[in-house]
Length: 224
Image 1 (spheres, rainbow, N blue to C red):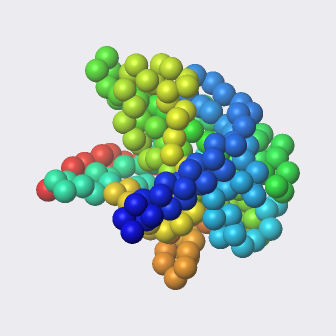
Image 2 (image 1 turned 60 degrees about the vertical axis):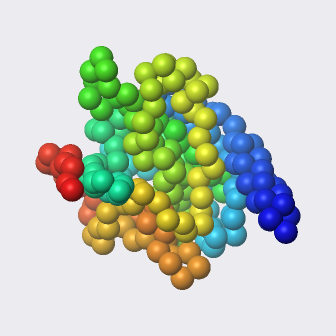
């Protein structure tokens, strides 16, 4: 019985991975990779219950206004860590390209973004990698995070193939040490099978003027 369960688990993971791995690279720099993924190839794609509205035109500046204030908290056995998801330079270096991608894709395509950035800019610091899905539907701008500031060594961060190898980003709700900090003024969590998916954010786009990049404060901290 245990062997049957193990085999089923392997087959399920292989199926999800193969679907996600069909993503195709459409644009890249030394620190950014943008892919297209057919909606039908996204694991659990039926959880996207609204029609995708691509192509969609949104300015890079407004994109930064929308996602630039998002913060996350990482909880481990020994501490908690609270930070902005994106460094401002990271956003400035990627917003133009993400904006153009949303404008170029059709309603069958999901945007997949993988970004790395050295937040400390020191000789001994590692890169931080963030990955996410993005699309626009009737509810607004959807962002589903995978990795959030995961450590990537200097060696891997200098090799495009290495740092772009990510796990499939899940539309299913599952426990995670990283969670986006709630901000009802900016976004809502997507509800999946009765539970809030705290890495799937929906930003309404009916009133873009309400989004403004706020002045940042030093929130990097660790607590026992």
